Amino acid sequence: MRKLLTLSKEGKLRLRAPDGVETEIQARRRNALLLIDTSGSMAGAKIDQAKSGAIDFAHSATRKGYATALAIFADRAAMVCDPSIDAAHFTRKLAHLEVGLVGGTTDLAAGLVLAGKFSELAAVVIVTDGQTNSNRAALDEGARLKSRGVDIICIGTDDADSEFLKRLATRSDLALHVAAQELRSAITGASRLLGSGDEL
Image (cartoon, rainbow, N blue to C red):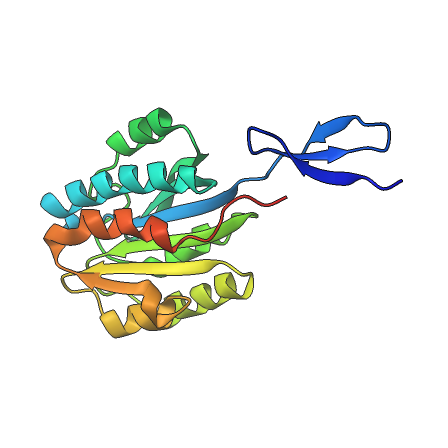
């Protein structure tokens, strides 16, 4: 007699053994990384918009089965929050995010190198308002991520190069260029571009 896959009243997948014993199958969450530009030009309303959008994104991503991580980049890159589904924890970590923490220029490649260190990463959402120090280095790092099946979603504002972001994104329709005052809603909306997050 074969094992049967069943669905409980609570919507949980279960495996029923020949003796009738059912075992719940635990789904594994996938990780989405928000990679936010904190170079000098992001000061003021833009960083506030990015922080608010990040909180919205994390809430939506959790509902889709994702844990959200947060990293920043400028001269170099740094982790702010490891993958989490705890909204309060994520918000506390985000509160410490400031412009200038990792320098003043825009080295997107450094952020993508950091993203490449994640073993189970499904998507990277890049938020930037300027042109990176080296398009070639960023595209090379982006290609490495995409070869692993990682989706790259790009959100640019102000001086961000929209054509470059289209090349960097997994598909050109995953690259958005928005007005600075629309940054929050664009980041929030990026959660809709994530696939189904739970894997068996």
